[in-house]
Image 1 (cartoon, one colour):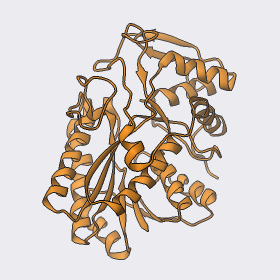
Image 2 (image 1 turned 180 degrees about the horizontal axis):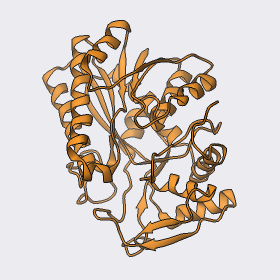
Image 3 (image 1 turned 90 degrees about the vertical axis):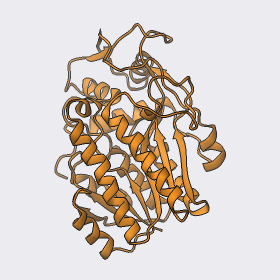
Image 4 (image 1 turned 30 degrees about the horizontal axis):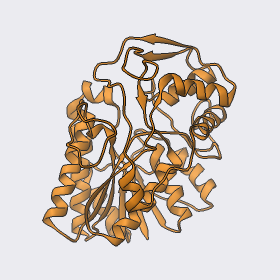
Length: 338
């Protein structure tokens, strides 16, 4: 199968590209490199033993998209491309709604024009909002607490409506929980721009000396140790979930939704402790006030993904913290000239 991967040079996208190639799929990458680095492509070429087919451009540019689909034979699309900073989305909501929603609409319109109706969408556990009971299950009502989350809610609704209107579409929404880790080679991993929004790159930047200490946002949640609890999943497991979703799309039409998580929560302090024990690196931290909108505990019910996709996580928390540190210590300045 020839798969177009939008945002294929990003953190999750790049790992999924390698998983697709390992499963004998041909890959075409589309990326504007606004939140990734062109040298990722060099690393993907190195790790895959192939020369990646890459189109550099933006989903907001419909003529560019039409050109890609005109030139390439495409069987399916995995759609990662989008802005993803919660804080930035609160500060610049119009930017997020235009980029994430309009970009997706452009992609869908071009896919429809070229009769390519097989799509896997990169959604998020943020669509469960703040009021659902744990663990989060796919049939629960969706909502959000910030504009980034609402872009995911809205795009899922668009995709569901599209599948209802035209039964020839095969669409899977994958709701990620908290991806961490990196490729076992240490050659590709998460490279946040500016101050990290996620916990693990913040920890690794402290470990490598980029930052002096970690800020722990709140220790008064109703959790095992008062710090926030999240469902951390290794990016390699997450990437494999996309391959399984593509297979499901071939077998079944309509719109489907699956959680991709481990089903177990780990607190901030537990993650710090696991990192220190596995990597023998001390992580100094200080507790600061909670962030607005943060909820105490988030974890998945993975039953549906297990039963319908055959998806189970294989990587442990030790694998996650070890691979994260292996990536950071070998790339202290991120992607540099190879």
